[in-house]
Structure formats: C-alpha cells, structure tokens
Length: 237
Ligand SMILES: [Zn+2]
Image (tube, rainbow, N blue to C red; front, side, top):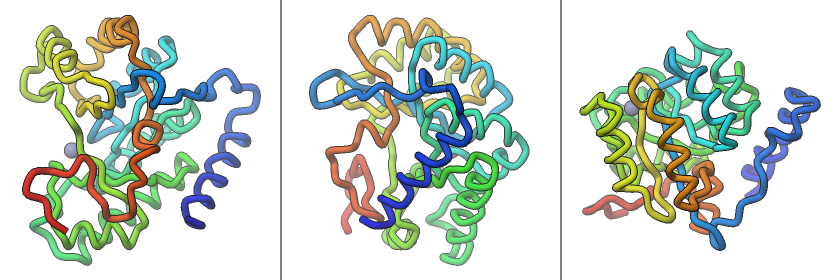
C-alpha cells in the first residue's frame, strides 16, 4: 500500500512540474461503476506514429494505456514523455520483447528493470502495470512481477490489427469486442490502427463509452502484485 501511495504522489508531483497551465489535460474523474468504460491499450511502442495517435486522443479527450518497450522509449523519448504529460498511462512491456516463459529469472528481471528505469528517466513516471510480451506468463513471471509490485494486465479482446492491417477490419473487430469494462489490445506501430482511430473513437463515444486508462478501469478489481487480469483459461496460482 505504501508503495502504491508513494508512486501516486510521485506522479502528482511530476504532473505539476511538467504541465504548468495544462490543467485542462487532467483526466476528468470518470466513475466506471456508473458509466460505460473501455481501456484501449497500445503495445510495443512508442512507434513512429505515436505523435499522430496522441494528437487524435487529445482531440477527442480520450485516455489510453501504452505498454511500452524500453528499447523504443530510449529511441523515441519525446513520445513517452508526451504520453505521460497528456494523462495517458505508461505500462511496462519489457525492454526487447522476449517471451518471458522461455528466458531465465535474471533476464526477466533485467528486461523489467531496464524498462522501468528508462521510462522513469524520460517520462518521469514509474509504470505500475506489466504486460508480459505475447501475454505469456507463468508462475515464475508472476513471482517476479510481484517483486516489482506490479500486477500483469492482459486483454479482454484484440483488434487483430497486426494481422489484418486494414482500417475497416480493425474498426469492425474492435467494435465487436468493445463491451463495458473491455481492455482492447492494439498496436501503434500498425499505421492503419492509427489511421482508424479518429472514426473509431467517435463511434465508441457515440455508443456512450468513456475511454479511460487501465488503472482507472480496474480500480475496483483490487489487484495484488503478481496477479494477472483478466485471468487466462487454465491459469492456476
Ligand atoms: Zn508486444
């Protein structure tokens, strides 16, 4: 609890120092027990299209969660910083995207730590959520996530954007999996995903959805470090 509290305070302090006069960018309090919420999540970035995506999110007052790869945070630090400044959530998606269930514990720890460090360094925030590459986890990965104080976040539905790379297909598939409380998997390195966002966000908002961060969406789940959500089939701890 104290760790959680400390990181919230750290984020608040950063928000104050990084965004003087940007109070309008602060997320409005949305109560997802009262209104329909969805969390769009973008993996493997920041990609070269992240700026365009951030422009779209800002224009529509939508928040998203970016599960970032440390190697790209290092090569595109300005995008990572902008994500934090504009009220999006930054999550840890490893440094170089290995399958955590096939590498040793020291390598997993290093992948997570290096990514925490570079995000803290360039964006001033400490990710509170881990999304293991490919959504692949086992008990060892869960134990290590717990050491870092982070639950693991998977997704309730995928846009299948990396597969179709087609704007219409991405919109159709995303709308098909968009339900109250959904966590949707997308990728900002898929150009067609970024291109589809203005129309997709408009449609979702017209259906009454509020686009919120994962932490906002799962607030009532009371996840513990090392927990996995949603719990995959066959998962036992
Ligand atoms: Zn990934």
